[in-house]
Image 1 (cartoon, helix red, strand yellow):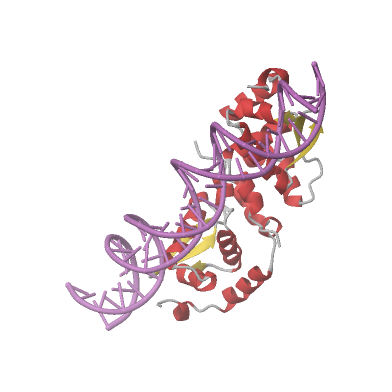
Image 2 (image 1 turned 135 degrees about the horizontal axis):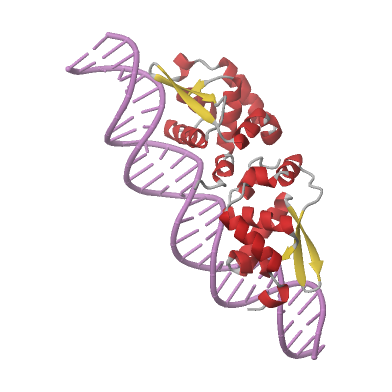
Length: 114
Length: 114
DNA sequence: TTTATATTTCGGCGGTTAACGAAATGAATT
DNA sequence: AATTCATTTCGTTAACCGCCGAAATATAAA
């Protein structure tokens, strides 16, 4: 049986919350997220796999990129509840604002490959 | 500024979820909870202090005992949302069922002092 | 089929946390 | 005041987790 706390565990890391808020704006690939969070690519990949495993996000292969998107139809109703009112649960601060700006202007071809 | 993830951290431990569900039935003192969870008294006290710090529960001195109760009026709206629909968020399993039984029959004078 | 690029997986390091028992605190009873 | 009992705080240990870089995998381009 699945551990009831895993959904909360997934949400208990600030960087994962930032990722969710960013994906709410538009789909992003790993290196775009890496560029904004300023973490190692492998670390970002780990976070994404946690969010995917819990059902918060989905991945879509797109050529050599992997786009991650907010899961539009989560099985777990708690997940959809969190996702449909993300702002209520996670709120908004200076970091989110700055992230939002970067998400809108980030260029995949520019930030990938370093 | 308060870390947005602490509320999820508080909920990411199975024993703390069990405590919340138990307190939903009735106020309990530390050693009653200790008796049901089968943990060291100090460990239970730690869990309670986390839940109290986040605003999920309150303490009420009662002679030599300290009763813990679900916070009836949390400041943080996310906390009240979780608390008013605990079953939705935490669900219910065999352990909770067994806990519930024990909560109803536990006798403070019997289990304290060992 | 080689090369380049994006991502995942692996191994390891450092910080965090749940667990415990022992010691300290606080509050009632003697 | 001394004792007893419930609880908290402290110090320690073991497990876990986020992070990184390196190696492995996957896909596109040459």
